[in-house]
Length: 172
Image 1 (cartoon, rainbow, N blue to C red):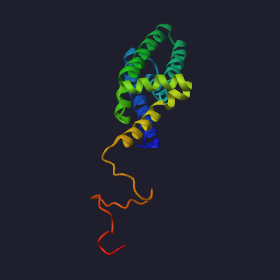
Image 2 (image 1 turned 60 degrees about the vertical axis):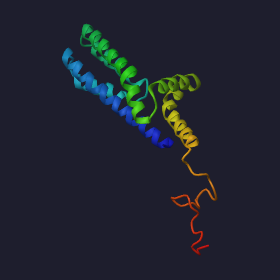
Image 3 (image 1 turned 30 degrees about the vertical axis):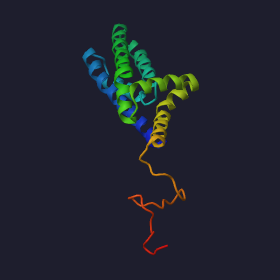
Image 4 (image 1 turned 180 degrees about the vertical axis):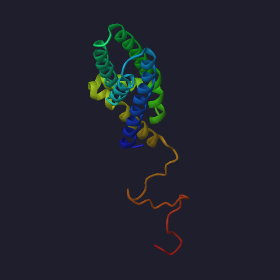
C-alpha cells in the first residue's frame, strides 16, 4: 500500500471509532437520562475524528454543558464517557486500526509511542500511516517472488512466464 492507502485506512479507522463512540455513548446517555443525549453522543463521536485528543475535548465540552444542568449527572456522564474512551483506546482502536492497516496492535502502540517521542502530537498523528508505509516497503524489499529488475524502470522485458519478450519470434 502507498502512503495514500495507509492514510485512507487511518481515516476510515477514525470514522469507525467515532461511530463506535457515538453509538455506545448515545445508549449510555439515554440510560442515564441525559437530556439531548443523542446530540451529546454524536458530538463526542464527531470530535473523535480529531486523532487522539478529539474524544477528550468532546467529553470535556459535554461535561461542562451538562454541569449547568445537574452536577451528579455530570459526574455520571464523565465516568461513563471516560470508561468508554478507555475501552475504545485500549481494546477497540488497536484492533480496528490493525485490521485496516495490517499492523499488529503491539506495533501500533510502539509506533504511537515512538511517534510521540520524536514528533510530539504531529508524530502521533502520522505514526500509524507512516508505519503502514514502512511495512509495505519492507514487504516489497523482502519479497523473494519479485523478479529481478532488468531494463528500464518503465518497461519490463520479461513476460508473465519470466521469458524475454519477442525473442525467437522475429520481432527484434
